[in-house]
Image (cartoon, rainbow, N blue to C red; front, side, top):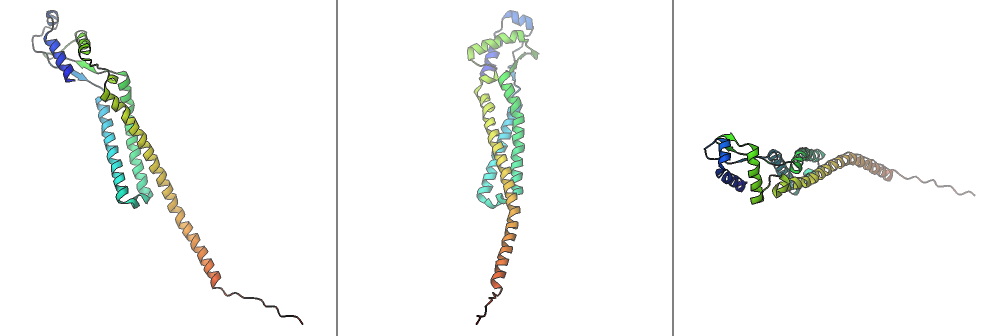
Length: 211
């Protein structure tokens, strides 16, 4: 980006007399500015991915330090709900970012003495910069933007899997908590009946021999 700005400033500084007459400006050219519409969505995606990483790290630490805490259905369900919320947020940011990355380019503007340079004059300079430096304003041609367009989708996939797994674990743990007291109660009744049978006297009927 700095290389693009310096090259554009150099070309503007050595502009032709006809261009100078058209602009009617004798001041030093200002540095060109590049306006991108992927900055905000990219920043949101990066922030959400960092939060997801921190949350999963905390969950793993709690699991290693206090494994018994994951036997409570409510705690497991809350953790799954938090991950589901950030997964939805990440998806909402990835959709427009992917659209911008595939279809749009960065908008470049420059000014001289506070006056904007017309695109009819600026565009040939931009094309010359692209030929000289190989820098292009198309988003899909930049590797670092491509990484942001690919890697967070993998993060979203694993976040959804983790959230669903936690919900299933919470449901099974809740079912287990409900069935265990009933099983223990039934087992207690069976043990009591067996004990009563063992304690009751056994009477035998002896038939007298017939003569």
